[in-house]
Image (tube, rainbow, N blue to C red; front, side, top):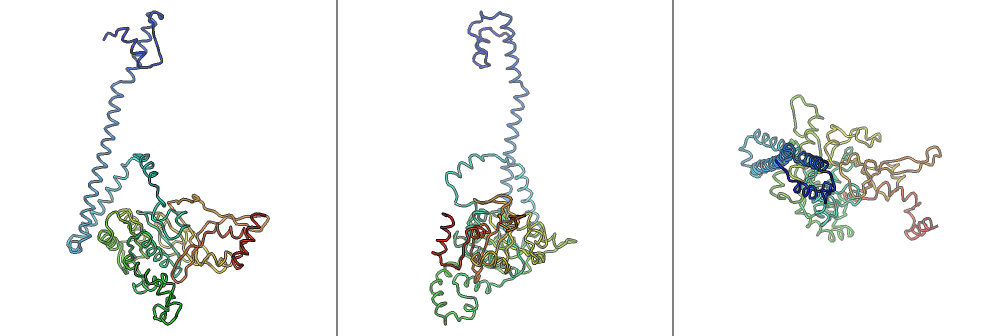
Length: 458
């Protein structure tokens, strides 16, 4: 195909190859031809049929990927809707073969995994970040009644599993019930407590004691009415009892395997909460309750139970709070993941796991009574709050030893548990700050404030 010199010269200027020719007479004709040839070769290489086909193929892959993701989303929604119909209707659930339900649940999990693998990580992330900035949230997840927990761990996020672990009778059930009650009031949303041990009457009186401030014995026996202080307290707090009555539900589930637990939660969520609405679910606590498996060890069955709870929280996009026992290592002072009983899967799958235990006598003496009766020691956390320190949240403690002037301890949160009511009392960092300032909590506030001001200002 012939190419006119004038047209080529115009094209050389227009395509901006950084070659500008205003007068062809300024160049020899042979030089000009060579220049034209070079530029045409460059252009031909840049628009070869191979590159065009590659671009088309790339675009085709993107369209195919998006179509597959849409198809998977549609299939997942269809199967979830069918499963919801079965779970909502107890009569229908009895008629449908349990094996078929399990197969459908398995299919949904496989489809979810396939969809997750296909999703593009950075698709629309910039738009999401900018859109969120228009309406910032106060907290990453649902705020708890405990400010230090919120700022360090971001509250409690839907779709995540949280675990509080301790030895028996250290307060696991107390803090879980406290969180369920207070978070349901904060967020005006329903809460469900699934209890493997505690009867409803026991929980009722304990929650009433926490709300009113009246000791448990006086409530159970009815003697509160003959004590003026407690009578006045009851009259003041009675309204709070009425406000809470429609928010927290309780179900005794001793001996029920995890499949039945998940079915109960799904039915409650769809009938009492509604898809997409906030709620809190507490499962107290993780142990074998009817689960069995051919040739499986206890730790394997417990691991499968943890996995089922995690999958349930993801499926319904709700937070699930649970608890687990610590083994006897904890009694000798072991405050790390090695003391968690039964299965490593707890630390693998949960978004937060912390040791919640009573303080030892020497710890109360060293830290001060004002910093409470219990401590929450983080073992593992997948999420970080506003003031999170990262992988290591350490506090420097002076030792008084010139050879080793400081030691480092993992930061923890202090709690005071009184009459089944749980309140935060600062962190280890706050304890150390009080030590540095030489705070004496037995002195009058004004006197102590003057001493602190003198130390700070000189």
